Image (cartoon, rainbow, N blue to C red; front, side):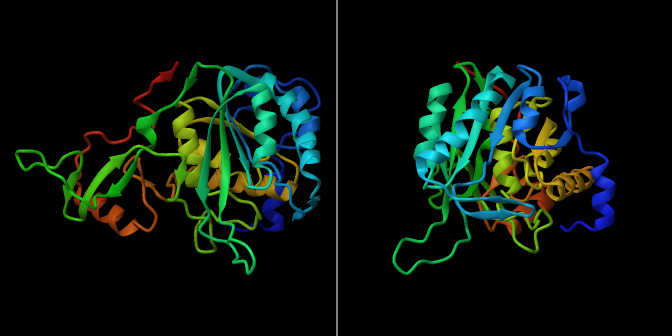
Length: 325
């Protein structure tokens, strides 16, 4: 997706800048074009159900009009902690928090996170792109820290099960499928997701969600997080919104959202993607209300067309809920 100068001028009119305490209803389904240090003090208290943070990694990188310079590991932690602590009052006591990191800074961020939250898991997901290395292992993974404010939090396990092909189709004593289903397109079962995610595809040039943001996350990744850790109508906040993936997926899945993005071009690009999401609710790799393995589009289309797959045990997209205790 690209953004013309005319479109940028048009979408700029939708952007917010905060200069006083702002009620929740004025922030709902909006994009703030502002530095987080300026915006955070004006956010209301206790309104966020799910906080997703994808900060600049500790790498020297340009983000259109902005530039992040690599620093010593401990300095990166000192950069992260002050604004992170200031955003915590915006969270409900039942809120969940996910924080992205690469391997270099993952340990540093864990130390900061566990000062303020309960760290429940580290998810490692496979990036299917990455440059090879001559004197080291190729780096093609990133980390996601899953944290909660308290022991009372949402986790919808049925909403994030993965439909996988059955390699060993065991049957019961009557010869019936044991925990799997037979279709004309193959044999499948719904499996519980682990903390290693290998079914994601980084946005590339031919995918409708692709933009020129250098750190764009896949919509499928956000869909897993949003479906697992929020319910319909909940409020999702992303303080480093980039090109708007979190807000777009939240909109497609029936959540309220707020994105904060420093760069005007990316903020306008997010608004264009949100406008497109009015008509297109699809999420690559998520169909029939379940997540699918990578490179399974043929099977998805075949099963959808045949309508032969039983809906028993199908992920509900947030309807079958449980509140973890």
